[in-house]
Length: 301
Image 1: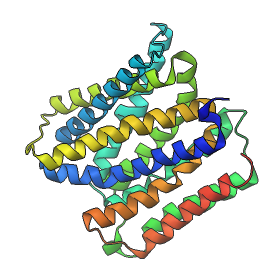
Image 2 (image 1 turned 90 degrees about the vertical axis):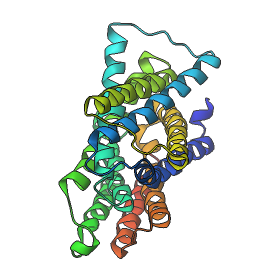
Image 3 (image 1 turned 180 degrees about the horizontal axis):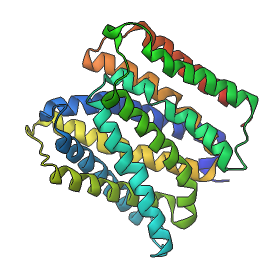
Image 4 (image 1 turned 90 degrees about the horizontal axis):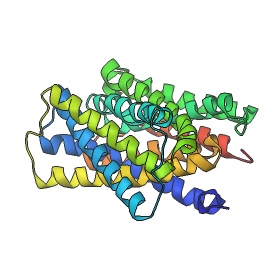
C-alpha cells in the first residue's frame, strides 16, 4: 500500500494542503496591497496569479525530474486532457478566484469557497463507483450549504452577495470541484506529480499572457510583496502536489472532506492579518460548513 493510501498519512497530507490553502486568502490580499494592485486592475491581478502558479509548476516539475518521475505522455490524446485540466484547475479557477478576492473580504471568501467541497462530494457520487451517495452525505451537504447561505444573513454592514465578489468565488468553487474530478483522469495519463506541474505551469503562463495583454504590471515591487508571492508559490507547489496525489489513489469524497479547515483557517487568518471585522455570522457559517463536512466524513466513505 502506498503511503498516500495509509489512513494516518492521508490525514496528515490532506490537512497540510488544507491549512496551507487557508493561509492563501490573507496572503493574496496582503500581496495585492504591497504591490499596489487595486480592485480595478484586472491585468495586474492575472499577472500576479500567473507568476505564482507558473513558478509553482516549474518547482513541481523540477522535483519530479530529480526524483526520476516519468514524463511520458501521448501527445495527441494525453496532452489534450492535460491542457483541459490546466485550463480548469489553474487558469479559469484562479481567474475567478483573484477577481473575487479583490471584491470580497478574505474571511467571507474563505467560507464561501467551501462550496467546492460539497460539490465534489455530490459530483463524485455521480461519476465514480467508489463514491456512493448516502443519506449521511446528503445530510452533510444540506448542513454545509446552509452554512454558505448563512453568509447572507444580517444587514449590508455585515456583507451581502455581490456578483464580482461572491459570484466570482462561486464560479471558482465550481471550477475547483470539476478539476478535482478530472484529477483521476489525469493520473491515468501521466504521473500525477508531473501532471500537476504541467497544469500549474501551463495554466500559470496563460494567466501571465492574459495579464500582459490586459496591461498588467506589478506597480510597487517591494520586499513584503515578494515574500507574499514566494509563500504563495510554496503553498501552490506543496498543496497541489499532495492533494492531487491523494485524489489519484483514494475516493475523491474521502479526500475532499478534509478541506473543512480551509474556510476556518482562511476566515480566522484574514481577520487576524487584515484586521477585518469578524461578524457573528462568519462563526455560524464556518461552524455549519465544518459540521457538514464532519457528518460526511463520519464512519465509512
